Image (cartoon, rainbow, N blue to C red; front, side, top):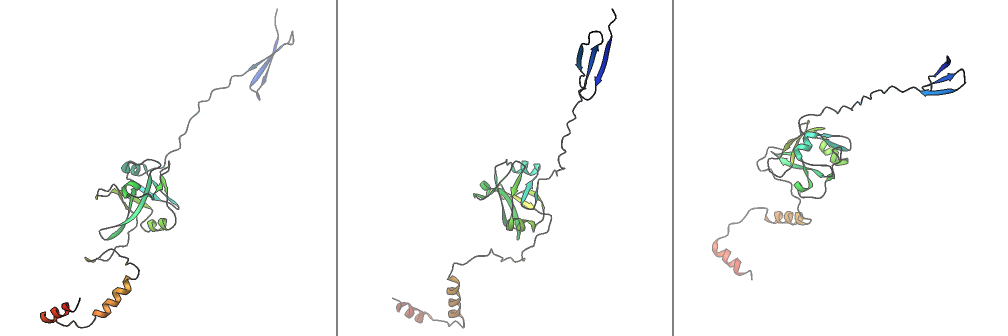
Length: 201
């Protein structure tokens, strides 16, 4: 006996129906979907310098992979930037809380950024926006930051000393003392000096 079938395709649902015209029986068959191979496109990482670098941004700074490796730090480490005089030039120095023996640093995030806002950001920006790290030769475990701007140099003076803040009230005492000793200094012979000493009792 010759069987007669009617084939109808449902392209929208991805199936087709087989209708037995003799019995009216309908059989639905799903069309297997073609397995398309997913191509995973990795987001290309930004080109990083092979040099250890710190990049200053608006409210933070970022360390590249080479800098992280050089410093040997991991996320959650606390980092500090302090100004130090090197060869009579005030220079930014980067280090961990441990290296500076302080507890005031900012946290290194998983994306290797550290908060740097306000006056701290402005002070660092005076030296540039891209800094190369160099291990500090003083052995403190800190790192000298070489910016892409030329910093201001201090006067070439062999007697140059760090600025010292005098205690309150001491300045007036020094000024008064200077007023007393100003003028010519008399020469005192030995007998006169001895007599002066005897009178101080």
